[in-house]
Structures are given as C-alpha cells and as structure tokens.
Length: 220
Image (cartoon, rainbow, N blue to C red; front, top):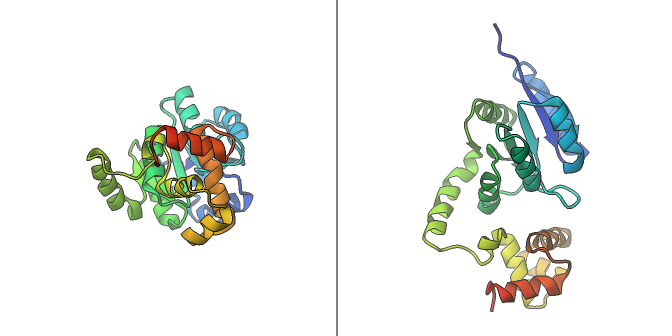
C-alpha cells in the first residue's frame, strides 16, 4: 500500500509566503499536502486542534503578541506528541536553541529547496529532529561555546545575537536610524528587532529595555 502524504498546517503572517510554499510543495503532492493555513497563532490553534495534522510548519515571528515559538510551546503543552517545525528566514543559532527548548521537532530556513524541505518534514514525521544543514555545524560550535560560558550578552534572556547588539545601541542612546547605519540594516528591520526585545524583556518601551539591561548586568 502506498504511504499517505503528510498532512501539513502552515502558519505564517504573510499570505504570499504561504502561497509560495503551496506552489513549491505542489510538486510533491504524493508526499506532502497542505490541509490548512493560518496567518496568526490565535487562528492557528483551533485549526490545528480540528485538523490534527502530521506536522505544523510555522514562522518564528508572527504578528501580534504570540510568536511562532510561543505557538510551538502551547501546541506541545496541549499535545506532547505534536510535531512542530519552525520555518524561518533567520539563520541565528539562538533562534534554533529557543525552538528546540520550546519542543520543536525541527528548525529549517526558508531558503531550503523543495526536495530538502519535504525530506526533512518526512524525517520529522517519523520521529526525528531536523536542523537546516547550513546551520548544523555552527549550531554545534555555538553549543560548545555556550557550555563553556562564552556567549553573547543577553543570551540568557533569550535574546539573539543581533537583538543583543541592538539592545547595546539602545543602552547607548542611539535612534533606530542610527542603529540601522551602524549595523548596515534597514530601519524597519531594526524596528522589528526592537519589538522582539521589548517582548522578550517584557517591557513596553526603550527606557524599560535599558533598565532591564542595566539591572541584569547585560551592559554596563
């Protein structure tokens, strides 16, 4: 008997990303099928409970207060057997570590090709843990540094390396535009990092973020 295709629910706050994923996976209909989609964590949870997919594929960052990492935690708490894969544009090892701590069964980059994505989803469905091949070596090296106590400021507060850099500039009093210039990033990208910092540090503004940074000794 032919194996049934994997049933996927995809969560991403950009509908064009979902449509692109559908187009890529349409070439592998005999192996995977998207049976549901959602643009937010809040709309995803009841859909996943109803459809009970083999694998949930979600972006790390979602609009609203609930991130893909938060969604992963909630899904695993509701059903420890749930298989969740983070599909992200961020090749940051700290996001990978956070995903694994949240109970994710995989962390893959959006740059992965269709065959690679399907192959890794099949591994996840079979009970394996999938890490994007381009990150695997760096993740091992970072884990070794973490074990030795050598890591970036803010890692223990779940900040990524880039978010830690942005926080350092916030402490120094730089504007978003100035930070963008220093890091050679777009201003909107900096704003996105600042929002993530506020959420992770559980503060509402720059003053709160700076206060936490100084209180925790992240930056002097």
